[in-house]
Image 1 (cartoon, rainbow, N blue to C red):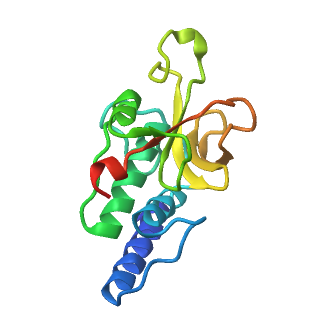
Image 2 (image 1 turned 90 degrees about the vertical axis):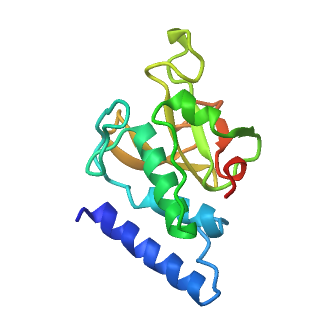
Length: 173
């Protein structure tokens, strides 16, 4: 079992145990419940190698940014509620599953238009995404660094205008 899966299993056990005794899981940067589970699921992938994958082909040993979102949202919602939220495999599809927010909360998704010359705002081949964890921080599968990392919400100032999308609330979480 991969270390990310082992950590995720521990998260699921902790959330299940807390729920069975009427406790709330420990907050992650102000997050509670499902949002904390999504943040913890994203954190479980820290250090995982980056690998570009198209469609539904990504695994858990190496992930790209859209795949990280799918795993974090599915694993976190499944651990916290017993029913996972399946995100679209495509960046624009993930955006369309939620609603834009101006005040992000942990567990929201973050999108950047990293290639303004591709002609497709938030949906071109080189655009990027990650999971907001609070305190202006994001977990993202970063091709430049080659692994999943804890990053600033502006990607260290290179992307000053992120788009924040809440996929949890509109989908009943």
